[in-house]
Length: 317
Image 1: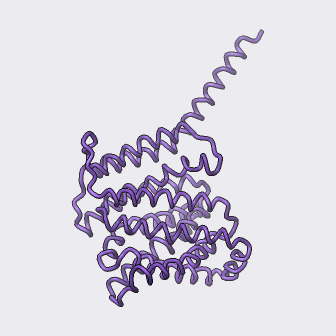
Image 2 (image 1 turned 30 degrees about the vertical axis):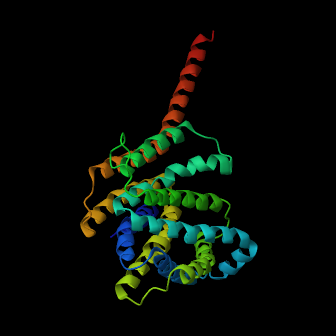
Image 3 (image 1 turned 45 degrees about the vertical axis):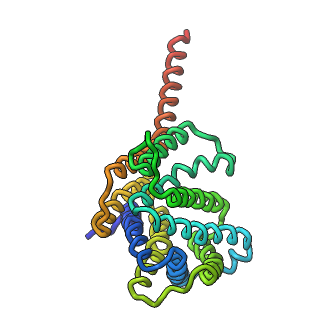
């Protein structure tokens, strides 16, 4: 059998990451049937720290943790508070209150929100494509949140809806701050988790209690830590590193919510509402428009420029 090319390896790593991410919404609900949101964050973060530490050890990069911390301690204090502490606490509480299909679909709006928040925070220009994408995607949010009763709004869990949309803001803030990170990405993620762990532990001891040594509970929490926070992140980084074009890999993300809905229906036996399909479809359409509209606009301008240039040449004597 011939050796895989770098592009083929990138696709395999990307598909592995997408598959893992597709299972975590189901894993969240299973874990939350045994653990409180705060307990789940604690177990998952400990698991992720262990996995990332082993990966860095295998790569012989553990020394980067001390170096990067000494260089920018306040930076990692910010990222650690946002992710894992605030983000996963808010996310897991939202999953605890909402059906998995709703929480999953609404969580995907972070990709629409990110370019909008980049305008005031990174001083980036607001594109018309981002506005159109946001309008389409957030109409999908309304469809899911109201279960299709758009004209007669009645939200089943206002707190759950507020939390899941708040989690997208926290996640976007985390990635916007990370645009200024020049360190090794795996070491940076591990540092964020190491910084966040004391805050998580303190909150757990004050407001909750340590999780019991229940095998099912611990297994579910460890799975979340490995395949939502730890190993999957490294798989995705490997895919991005190997691919000649980022677009080849980034489009694979669109498979994740579709697969996730399948796992939710199959494993959790959660009936999938027709409004979930409609709302999720609108959110994915918003993501597609966000990628395609700038290219279509650029292509139209290019063709228009060529047409004008041709007209000018015809008019020359």
